[in-house]
Length: 426
Image 1 (spheres, one colour):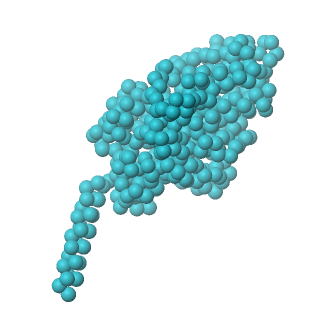
Image 2 (cartoon, one colour):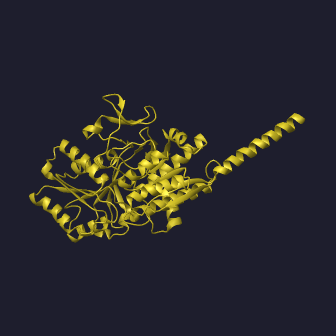
Image 3 (tube, helix red, strand yellow):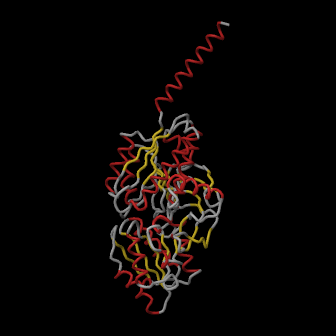
């Protein structure tokens, strides 16, 4: 009897110690690094709201590892160097266990050295140019082979586009994406003279000359298409100028990579019907999971609020992170990273997203037409496409692969059999 009492006392002591240790680690801090002011607030504020909703939902389920989740929200204010300072603040001051954040690639590039130095973990939810692989970042948005290349193929194969206007905001994502597309189009037999490239600053508002230049491309009777990597509130002026110039989608179709439901919610879309966007998700996806997600979002944020692709990326990434943390019983970054490989979670369009050893997801590619109500009619949807960190259409990248699981390398040169470091041109 004494033995049982002693054993029971020891058990209670261990339990108390364990609970105390858990309590010291509670709450689990989730960093939210999105611009709530400045030119990118039009896109990023919604992602902050998405993270707060997901955190609330998880806490209602009991949290993670017996702890409630607590959001640490900062505002880098569309100021790219400030992103690095705010990331350091999240990791060093708020002790964030994970960060969900960024939109532009220039902001992600700013954050990257801090995340790697402090061994943080960033989930990046937006389509991007690829040509990067960090062990501290999971890229839950689209790589070029999951958005830019399929959209270009749609222009070539379905719409018969013969001349291309590549219009982008002047920073790393549009420039690198367009470098890839110029190489890809050349391989498809499109002459250099039939590719017009133009970059404008963030927040650019006077689109009259650029739209006139695009219209002039069609003077020889060839079919012209616009591939848009314009970001943030500059899209409002661009689409308004298209409408003012009387350009319809039948005349010169536009496919956008950074325009979704949120950006269209501030526009009169009546003159934009038929223009396109390429993403991995649209609000109009007809699945039970999506209906539930939309209903939850509108109930929390208001009936007028829309959903979009980067929201789904955060939804997938957050739930994969929760499952990985639960599987290993800790929020420690190295353990969670290892548990992320092979994680699967249902996406909102009817398939299963899978986390690959290159820190990218396998996701479907969707192309949608803008409708008068600001939603998209899905006109094309693929099976899941594995995201590729390094493009096949730039010579220096074609020989590279990323495999953090088995090779422990994000830039493995398949010709030399060695792990190398490539310096960005931007």
